[in-house]
Length: 244
Image (cartoon, rainbow, N blue to C red; front, side, top):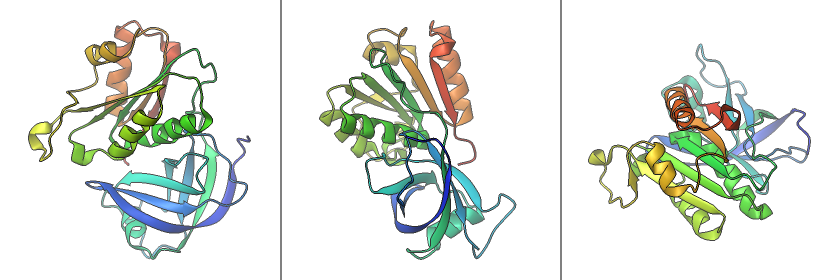
């Protein structure tokens, strides 16, 4: 496996809404593009019909696992030129992809559990890691705590529930913080991820490697909560998703 970046032209093959205001985009994965689950890529629109001050390139975590034959990203659909173009260009339109990059990947020591803490679209690197871990039959104990306002806002909820049923080493703990605005029933955890929820599902808060991904405010708050609970700062890995 190499970490050297590769730049190539790819094509948009499919897009779908995966939660309210959130879309997934699928691109060709060309031969030679090798990445580790959890890594990211840079996506550049080629001569888009409109642009703005934010430019034509964005970094995205790769949400699909390495074993799949395509590259999938997912994003909240803010009203920017980049995202308007991405949502409207014809399927088959070519884009430029550079990558992979980043080291937000599963640690090697299988005796140390991995605890993933995701908010909203911060779920994307974890989806890749969790699905690849099942494919590789890794011995790591994996825990995913996934916070959203409502089920309607939670990308990949059913896919993650399915992964939890398929992998005995993976425990999925979704939690909702604003069910008063939801039209769906919810029988899982409620409220933000805190020490109480973690302690309920993890045998010991000390020992695992913790991975945090989501909006900067959520990552900062969660990092502080963990350190206040006695988690070693060396056992924390973070990835901030700002701007979306």
